[in-house]
Image (cartoon, rainbow, N blue to C red; front, side, top):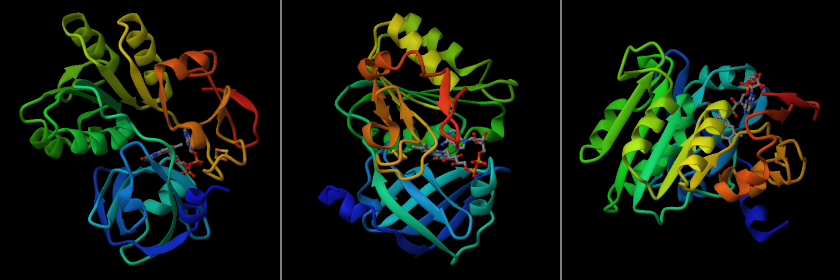
Length: 272
Ligand SMILES: Cc1cc2nc3c(=O)[nH]c(=O)nc-3n(C[C@H](O)[C@H](O)[C@H](O)COP(=O)(O)OP(=O)(O)OC[C@H]3O[C@@H](n4cnc5c(N)ncnc54)[C@H](O)[C@@H]3O)c2cc1C
Ligand code: FES
């Protein structure tokens, strides 16, 4: 085990400092952790909910020793985490994985649903860097568009394109329609994406068509988070160790699986 993992893989038991309700299903949980407060946008933690499970979560913010994750309740672990109270203990390992590059000048960020979490962290880090940013967010309905008021403040001199499937806010339709629309008019140096895998697969195909480099944050079931157990395998990669951020060149190598199949809890390949 590398020196990095020896240090960062140790579980720290930490009380929850603050909980913010984002909408009916989603909460932001904040805690103090020195190691995670150095995390870069795109990295994730393994968060242990006592007596329930340990799950991977992207870091939403880290500053001055405080770290936040934003969690959508979809199953037993996420529901249990979102019903915890301030002061109760969680366990944290990490941060793990790689992060988004930040060299490009004209950037397009596209996030669907709770997939916006790592992109919001990225936005906060790059927005003051004299970059030209277009932020596309999408969800089924208005109250699922996360962090809207803060994004509006951060992007006051940038472009925000919001999409809802029911038309309750912004453009009515699916998020990739907004992407195609803007790419017909403008060229970008890079696209950063996170969201449901079918959405990201469409973003990949569109980015290939317009010959724009892509960095996408992938999700797979994770157990160890450090490249040992194999539960997060996609093609030749382990998402926890080689990702979660994959660039266009890597995504081309896993084209047959990306957007189409994943391993279930028993290691069986199932359709997405
Ligand atoms: C690197 C990474 C970062 C993530 N960041 C976030 C985040 O910032 N916020 C957030 O809310 N969620 C995030 N997730 C997803 C989160 O880990 C899962 O929602 C959680 O593990 C589900 O656990 P559960 O016990 O509540 O649900 P389960 O009962 O385990 O599953 C409920 C449903 O979700 C599916 N599911 C479970 N885990 C995953 C997964 N890892 N990827 C895709 N589908 C899954 C199951 O197949 C099932 O259909 C991230 C996942 C990864 C791999
Ligand atoms: S979660 Fe174990 S190898 Fe990736």
